[in-house]
Length: 61
Ligand SMILES: [Zn+2]
Picture 1 (cartoon, rainbow, N blue to C red):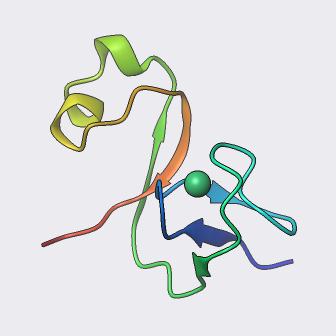
Picture 2: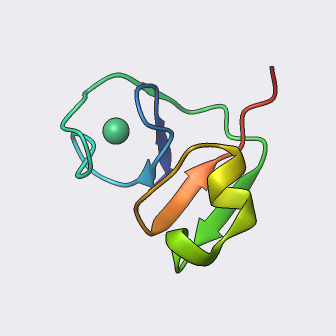
């Protein structure tokens, strides 16, 4: 089963909708991911404004 990347919060998940924010809009073109285990202590998480642990899509702007 392919992972999906939530368009709203960038969480990587499997299933019908995002378990984090409930959005059903997602991307399947996942080029890079990071896994956040402790968002409060993660500099990467701060940089991309994440505050929950999980696996997220890296989006470059
Ligand atoms: Zn989401």
